[in-house]
Length: 224
Image (cartoon, rainbow, N blue to C red; front, side):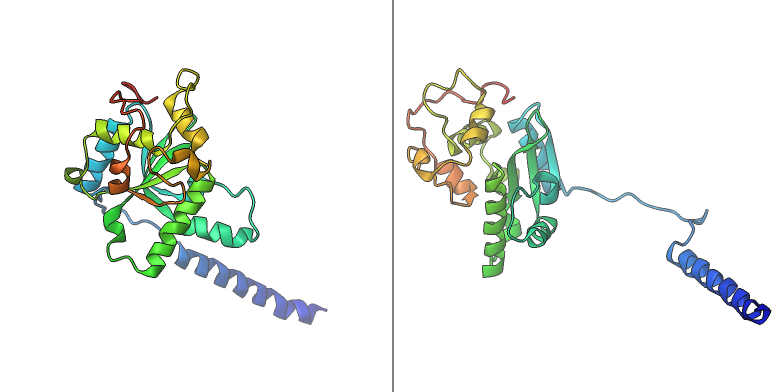
């Protein structure tokens, strides 16, 4: 019996030393001489687009580089693991939140899709499908504000992407109308020429026409 412990105790001690050694090697300690430098979170053009969206959506949070897994959750899926992997792999360049903190509009920069391959187009359609099922409009915008319309005109055209039913303007805010109508059928949007199944770019957005030709900004002075 004593002979067993004679060999076991040194072996256990050696094992503990090895465990502690490898743990230390994986997490090296900070050294007092270490120095760091700050890195830019945004390029100048990304910062300009952020300010542009903040101007178009005053009073509403605008976030940058938001993973889809933070924006939506899985309600139902034939393969939850595959669906979660899709969420983990995707993000949008900008997201505009409503008062409840949920994303109302998502924006990707068209420059990121330059030279679309079939795989890139498939990914774009998949992202659109995921966000559409959660009631979030995905729109592709230009890579610089110089190619964008005024923030006021952009806001007005966004309101045409989803048309509120007649007579409801006084019952709910424009943003609520947009969110409520987001998932309905294509025929509800025939007056603007927009089809719900389409991945919308800026050119398509700016081509939308109001059925009433009303030039008033449906968002009002503040789209809250």
